[in-house]
Length: 310
Image 1 (cartoon, rainbow, N blue to C red):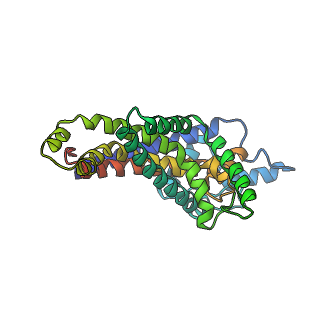
Image 2 (image 1 turned 60 degrees about the horizontal axis):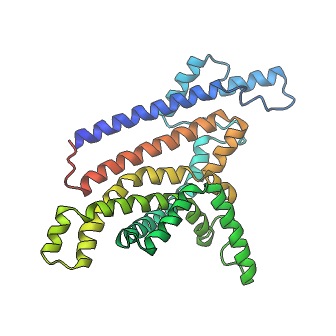
Image 3 (image 1 turned 90 degrees about the vertical axis):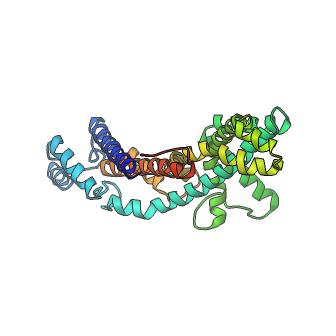
């Protein structure tokens, strides 16, 4: 187990290095630089700014400094956020994105397991058809469309009721979190529902299920102790990437609902060619995703005794 853990951590470090290198190369391949948009800049001022941010050095030297800073956890100073350090921006705004992401994954995992189990129990019947139709919609409709429709529907509901059932934007209270979390987790819930349905249908005809029924175990116990538990293992496998994906992929939802998360700053950095902000958040998000995948791999080995990690 320790050997496997060390091996996976080493793989994770290599993956993070590749992400950092690819991001650095991409930033230096695009036209212009972060100082291009500055107005009324004299050559002297530009030279001073290039020296301040290290842009006057050769690309190879910039790369080595960049890797050294990342290794020490220093992502540099943002070009556009009034000399704020990228670390401070991540520290201040990532908890907002993480909170929204955790609520969304809780909704997605609960709904995915529940609806997936229901579709398997009522296979080829009306509940199965209705849920799978909604699942197809959840997978097919883009997130920004769902966010806009959800916000518009909530506006109409509030007007009809004559009071604010849920706010249509902002952050800070539980009521602000409900609709964005539902919208953000909808696509993942649809995917988990399909995965859970397939896993349930595969396990139904397994030998251990037939043995449990032959022993006279109640149907509820067979379902909860054998079918549901074993069918949930594939869902657990994808929860790590799903958590990371939702937590780091709520850019559109954060923008539509005016949520002060890290995703909004990332979008602004891309629009303004903020090198340090783009590279810092990309490496941070990449490292977070790698860590979640490794964590789920280790947890999966503990949950399923048939898996042997050496």
